[in-house]
Length: 148
Image 1 (cartoon, one colour):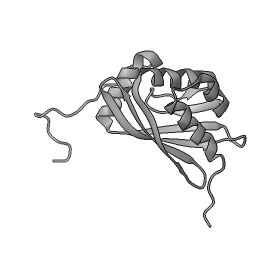
Image 2 (spheres, one colour):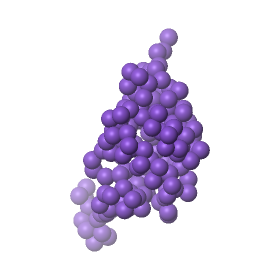
Image 3 (cartoon, one colour):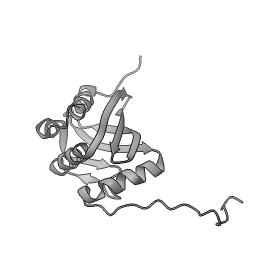
Image 4 (cartoon, one colour):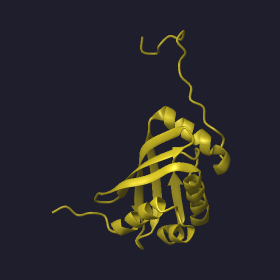
């Protein structure tokens, strides 16, 4: 028999909270005091409950689509499949979560695709999150391919 990580209900409540507009009081109750969010905000994680709540609320407030569609569970972690659109940038991604022993969200790694859309999303969020905007760099048509 497969054993799943405990506290799936916490992530389901998080997804419902985001889908309902990201209430700060609800978010505070779901996040651990020293939660760390690793994702499209910048190179360093967002650390601490208060900062994480502010960041999540800011992203949700700027988005025209911030929808969590499915919660997935494994032996040690939970994840949620989401879609996020801010301005003209939209990504599909996974919110990969580690819970603490109290059932609070302790660590989150946010993965998204596609790379160009992710860079555009980060640029659209950079001013609000206080992070420097990213730039997508590609080889120009005249550049030799590193694989040739």
